Image (cartoon, rainbow, N blue to C red; front, top):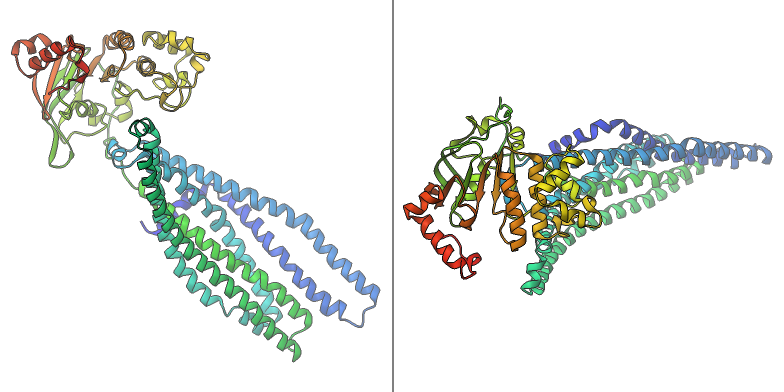
Length: 595
């Protein structure tokens, strides 16, 4: 996507607030053009009043008061209100446009497929939402308002200069071609280095996010010095790239400042020459000199705008890079809503790969009848989590089909499909906010009575009431204010509130103390009642009552059946179950992987 197209696309987010921009532009034009009347008044007073021998002192004084009073009135009643309007509406337009852009980007990110979050670290994603969007905001306040008012001021100045003395005006413009050359040259280099800086900032944010979130591991393995050295290297790289941009920006400013200071000296010399030979009046020369500052001020501002524009366009390139990424999982044309399902789930010759040519699961066939419990067991990497992730379409099958009540999940709208599926994961995920807000995530419009009933069913009600603020207790980032068992019971309450027809339990009781596990197992039994449930577990003692146990190995179903059937078959399941049983008597169960 070209720079021009990205700029035009950004204008689409600004367009709804164009009336604010129009008011800001008008205010800016007034702000920069009203002061341009001062040199004209000065010229008139010098040539026609102060140096006019035909006027008496009283007449000169009256003229002075008239013109000065008129200017003061213009500044008070015209200039001041429009300056206020310019700044207020420019900021309002920029903040509304950026709000719109950031919201759209955030919603787009949330709709991305699971593979997107696998490829991109959370810190890098957040960097685009925060720092890149902030750079883009400058484009509204500077480029889309200052450009117009600077251009208007420049035209007014040139109009007056050419009316006063065309040769002097042409000399004043002599440095413009040089300035434009460097303007174009530096803008490309600034944009390039800014993009690299934003990428390095995103990488640094990703690293910091990971290490801060995993600070327990860092401290446990005394990795503070190692991580600080890594961060130092990243910071040095960022410093080097930043200094390259600063070098370019400094050269840009130096050249602009030199040109805008040399030109007035040349104009004063040439104008003085014309005054000496009678081609220009003293008042005219004074007006020309007074116009030099507003003539070259836009050039200096354009130089600064060059930096803002380059930085903003680099940020927009990164923003639209994500916006142009299409989710891999989308609703098919004509996809239908899933009516209240009975919960029958069929896998028909399902295969899947994350990387083409490297299948994760192959030829998976089974049928889960409504209300039945399906357990998935097998060694790590055998495809258990992949299989359950295909049901809500976090990924799409490579071949075969998955049907719910006879409907291919790809023919169902994702929103209605996922509305009927509940998940309780090994790592309970809570969000910053209150306990009530986290439980309500299952059904945002639920009543207080429904929330309390769900918490009672999840064995969470009593511990919630024991907290100082009850349901209004803040859980902290990722629920850090709560224990593992408490967090898991809240995720169960969330699932109870959602009341799904299909339930996925992924190692929901791992790494819990005995008392917490007992309470959660009790709640899970109530949650599974009447629902089609998929259970992933390493401890086979937790799935002995499943209606069907799928034993996975190397991405295929090695055997399946009830616990009794699999024990009688004396295969992989039987061998591992007996091994776990023996080791559980030695209290070593948690150390045994499925293999």
